[in-house]
Length: 398
Ligand code: LMR
Image (cartoon, rainbow, N blue to C red; front, side, top):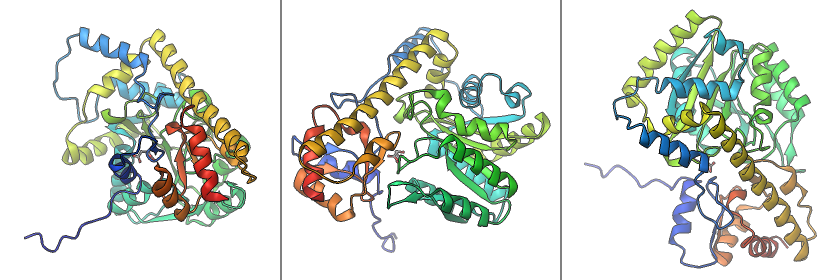
């Protein structure tokens, strides 16, 4: 019956972990998937999360179904975290937020919604972007194209190209923007550049969808990382917003995220929500409650929120330190190349400029694993393996 089904390739990102797990070398390093590790290379469970878990356990909660849209207190907390305490859309209920299966689920719900209510409208994603974006839109029957983003010659932003492409897209297109800590490049626009991007999107009446997977993780400040999202909202864009709580709360496997749509009125928001429910019900009925309870317990408690803020900053700072350290060791071991992009780029990832062949050599000769586009997850670097990594990178690039 299944003889016509051919074996498919591994996922370009998650497949790196599969290869890493097969390697028996004690010096192996996994710089593939974006998952934070502490300086002992161990997954980090935030203290704020542990305290919230204790509270949830002590509250003797039941395991009833959540509504289709998820846990209400979580949805509100997610929107407030992204848009800010005083946001008028939240105050006037001109927003609908649904809990989703992390950021991927948020994007998938968004894409299905566009497929149904903006049929034939093309989604523009940056070149390059997180590989899953293209597939999510394609699987949801949303045409997808890209706009210029990365400038390989200086490992920075091709701002002119980006503006030109957004201007050239048909009016009313869907423009996907990474809110902060662009994945895979670690290159973000400056505040001034964001203002221009907002203005151009406004002129073209584009619909802007933010992928916001790293709030707090880029700069260490959830407010600073929300700059672009809040700016676009202030500028009058009725944005779509996809949030993930995998990285900033360390809740990867709990699959906790949110999708929000801003509306012109509370009535319109209610209409949008009714359609999101109709769309979600046949996909997964309603979302799991655990991660939502953890996040909302933290964000509804001043002390836990404060603790979370200091822990997300600690994670962001460790990543920034590892960038500096990697560059230091590259130089120390004799590399004369310009590695300034390692410290200029921001967030969990660095787009190193390594070629696919160099990436293959890192795996086969040095047991260092990363995606073939040359992206390294800085979160996998520690003070113990950074020198080994620098020597390996120097070996394959000299
Ligand atoms: C990544 O890009 O490594 C993360 O967003 C994890 C994932 O699901 O790909």
